[in-house]
Length: 255
Ligand SMILES: Nc1ncnc2c1ncn2[C@@H]1O[C@H](COP(=O)(O)OP(=O)(O)O)[C@@H](O)[C@H]1O
Ligand SMILES: [Mg+2]
Image (cartoon, rainbow, N blue to C red; front, side, top):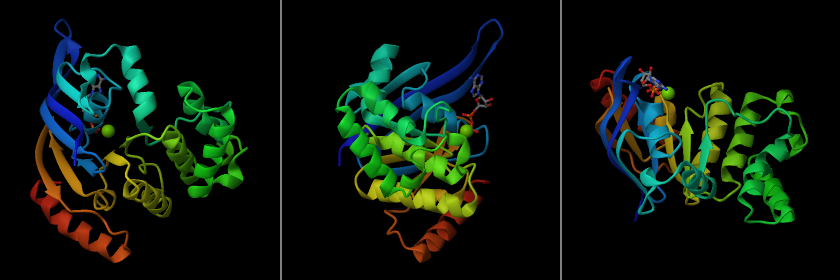
């Protein structure tokens, strides 16, 4: 399988020499294969979000390189990077970041209207299909303040998928949900991955990480270790087994 994302010796320093510098990422190497589902775990403050933002082109690394599909995106201009992101990557955060002035449907359509790859009718069609897939077609015209957190995250998934990305980045995508909504959202993400979309998800929840095929453990800005679980078959009983197995590994790392 080909490597879709290749991060080499990534450093991130915040601050400046006058007010003091803090090195948050300390030479991270990370390869993600096309179609893989990788979870990033680690203590709060270990640099998980920073790593995600820096290897997805949302933020600028201080040094090192990130190749997306063989192309060095760390050397591109901001405008070029946003184009790469718009056409190839999807993002899901802890909170949905949908626009309050638009309906659910309009929010989902927005990245596709921006990308200008499909006609408005095609976009509308794809949006409706996606909403149906994740079970939010009934709230299509709703105001985003009138729906549940789980529905908002499903809408965020649709928005992330509307441009058919190769990879979806998630920063604690279920962090604000109750356990049931969280399971439902993760079932959808597992299915998306099963259908070929690469997933890179930051989480502090071992129940979520147990759904990934590989778990990276970040400690003080370095990848300390990784654990290979293999693909999740979608069965509840294997999830419990996987989490059990991985918990021992996490405990040994002081998590
Ligand atoms: N924009 C920023 N400026 C300065 N320090 C930051 C910034 N973003 C994150 N940090 C620091 O980097 C460290 C790692 O943060 P973060 O990547 O959010 O950790 P995690 O997601 O693992 O909890 C923290 O100490 C945080 O305070
Ligand atoms: Mg974080």
